[in-house]
Amino acid sequence: MRQTFLLLIIAIIVVSLLVGAIYMVLRSLLDVVEDWQTARELKELKTEVSEQQQAQDQEHEIRLQNDCEHQWEGSLVGFPPGVCVRCGLEKTRPRGACDHVWRVEMKEVPGAVCETCGKQYHRAPSAI
Ligand SMILES: [Zn+2]
Ligand SMILES: [Zn+2]
Image (cartoon, rainbow, N blue to C red):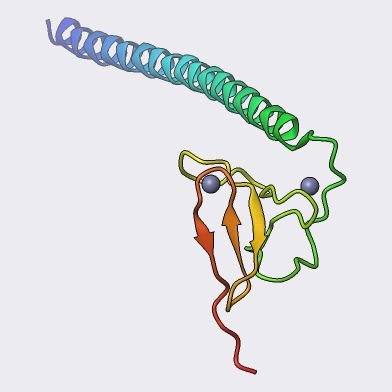
């Protein structure tokens, strides 16, 4: 009678260990699947982002194709920084509704004015 009781205890321990082991295996399997899914989603997201980036770059390039050999450096007179000296276009599309095209405006203080929206730009007066 005592032996049967001992066997029963051992059986319970073995079964619970087995259940525990199966549970652990299933958990790790689930983790692997989840990781794989997350990785795939991340990859898809990255592809999407890079596609958007490409579209943006393309838009950017099309915007700058206006038969002008842009010269971004050495801006004359009172142009804002990053503006083509030859055609007045900004190197990156400015925030806001207007894609400014700057023209030199000679007044008391040399500055620039956008020929589309009329926005004015005056470089901060430098100490001479
Ligand atoms: Zn230009
Ligand atoms: Zn403008």
